[in-house]
Amino acid sequence: MDFLHVTPNDNLSDILSKITQPTTIYLKKGVYRVKLVIAADNITLIGEDRETTVICYDDYARKPHSDGREYNTFRTFTVCVTGENVVIDNLTIANTNTAPETHGQCVALSVNAKVFHAKSCDLKSTQDTLFTAPFPDDLVIRYSGLTDDKTYYDGFIPREQLYMEGESFHYFENCRICGTVDFVFGGARALFENCELISLKEKRGTGFVAAPCHSLKQSLGYLFYKCAFENGGADNGSVYLARPWRDFGKCDFIDCTLENHISPLLFDKWNDTYRDKTARFSYCNLKGGSLAAVPWAHEITPENASDIINSFTTLKKKYFGV
Image 1 (cartoon, one colour):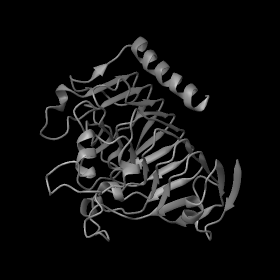
Image 2 (tube, helix red, strand yellow):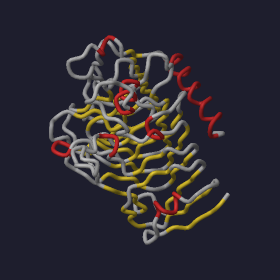
Image 3 (cartoon, one colour):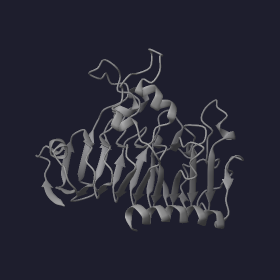
Image 4 (cartoon, helix red, strand yellow):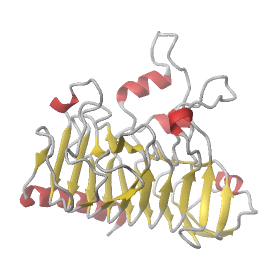
């Protein structure tokens, strides 16, 4: 195991590109304005101070890319993780674009790996703050160019970001994640434990926390466990806990607290779709507000909730030994 100490004056991107063995990098507090890809396995980034050790950039979906196309959602990241067993700890990752209504999506952290752990971190943006791979199958086809349709992008996203065989497990522990629309999205098995999900003011009116795209064959999706859904400026009743980005998206909300910005309906079916027939959303022991949840979501029993928690606990022990 190598140990490196890095300051904002160092070229963090260059340092990461040269790593060939397990390495822990200690980041001195300050602002690292850089767009990062963490491609090596077994990398740990530890910040000196959670709030003042900041990795930031400001790409956005409608920005023209050097290849002549727009960035689209998936090239806007500030940090993209493709290496396995990466850990980020005690730092902030931010996309500093603050105008999604005109600029489009703006990802702070994109996790395109099977095993990932974030603890005591702040993830900051507005629309599409955190992406957790895998991609939906239809987007893999679209972005890889595996089609005769010339309007599809060929090689739009690097293969190491696009392809991921098998299921992933991402663990977010004691993190603060803020945004406006679909600010936690993707198809990973992901546990959010003791996290704060902070909804900012959405100028277009309605906000959404999670947008899952799990396939039907996945028995586990997103679990928000002992999380606090906090109001960071959103209008009362204007935010939904989740809406399904693809038909069988799965979200479970257990032992969470809600503030007044969360709609009593809790969930949305996603525009003019029939995903209320296929989405797999459940909740148990939610505190705060008056709930009148949509009928297609399931209020599960404590016994069912315990089964879900135990499944994720098994994954924590398997991958992280906790």
